[in-house]
Length: 86
Image 1 (cartoon, helix red, strand yellow):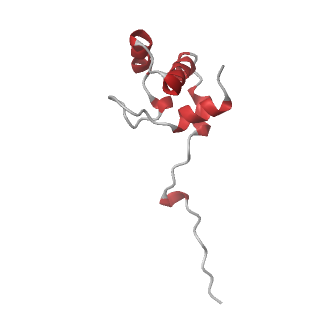
Image 2 (cartoon, rainbow, N blue to C red):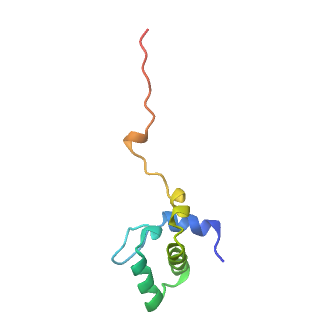
Image 3 (tube, rainbow, N blue to C red):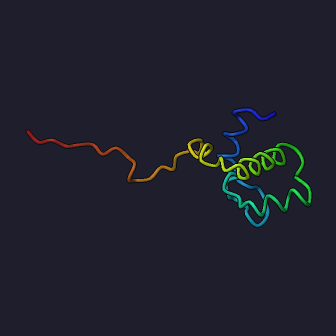
């Protein structure tokens, strides 16, 4: 059984190795996940998370995980301070 924390982790953790190193787990392509399914999942939490990502993708539920991604800070999202002159 997966927890809410698992959903947060797949939205914020990146792939630690391989062709897609640095890619968020939820953003991994489905064929890559299917390859793992056939070859064998990594051990531990990473393997569990990858299995969860595949289930989410197969069922078309990626949009449910999107809001859990960390917001990316950019200059356009910063609040600008208004200067007034008397």
